[in-house]
Image 1: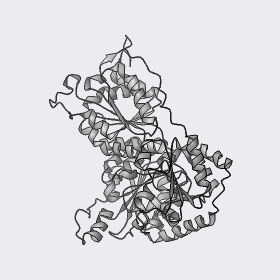
Image 2: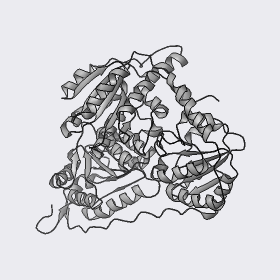
Image 3: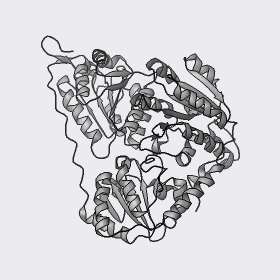
Length: 544
């Protein structure tokens, strides 16, 4: 990419910097301001593959899926202004889920920066908008700046509480040439070490606990083994919701969902919150047991202000738990002796959720067919809500959700990114008919790039939750809830994707087995009568 004088374009400098940071995939949709970047990607296709999409939100959600499932940085690129704004929901989702995603975008030409003359795709304070949506954003104004600012972007993205970052550059930057010096990868900012006094205090509190419970979120994904050992040491149930699913396997005696965890909450005297906002007990269960003590472990110091705790340990989850374990041994802290109570809570919850039909029966089939290390990508839908407590998860990162953003329509394109990250592992996207239509055009992407994703569309011809809420809370005055859909099988076939329609869990099983065995994208439509699903909300917002 260098000319005879060794000069490279700004686009070439960016691509080389990405390669230096071991990026092997860029999700992107080309446009005028970033032609120079795509030309550099074309010249580097031997070392970096470029995966396109049919809408900007598609590339950004794919990057989110890639990052969320793998834990590795993901990169996407789009034009500025409307292109960047089309990715806003995915950036917001990445921010909420602490996913390491890098957005590369353009700007107006250098001579038009800040003049508000209305050049193509101009957005007033474009960089300011990016800074609202990301953890860190900056502008590259000359090719010589690219290596350092890419290194800074990775440093900010991966240090501490991870999150999305962005780099913008003027239109002319991408084709301007200069002699560029590479920059070594920057070290991550040091994480705070667990405070020994706080560790000792936590052990003392746990030594007096009769009924401790552990709550895990996305910040505990890298601490699975340590958290499992802690749970076994204390005989403490580990409750996960969305982001923390699989930190402790649901097959483990101490691995609980919110449905089973709720049955033990009123007895809890010490809650250990590891890498979590503590959403379920604090915002969904709406009460605290008397004299409850809270121990928080979080890498983000601000979390101790957002939700104060009796003991706040600011540290990486794995380091903190591994520091706590030997202190528990030194202080002679023994198990709570509640193994049978915990087992009974799991049994009772498993029985109680059976009434959430037909969702639970469909989820059972998917779990039976999907390998233990397969990925399940949820969606804002009746089946998705139910999966938060009725779909067993056995490994960290194999359950992908949009977290607290609840980003309707995110699921299908996100699952494409998961499959790009793990082409040899099974990936299933479950979605409602409403959410699927947000990104249906990406069926073309699946075919074009050979992304062999299995998508199951649960078609109830409505935004099911909206419909129920209007019926129950607004005297049945339905508006905007019922939908008119295409024939999803014919639609899939028009893209070159084989589809199959089923109407029962029994019919789903062979259809899913066949789809997962295929070496091509597949769509399965599950016909669900409008308004027939039992509400899952009593297990998500229980009344104690």
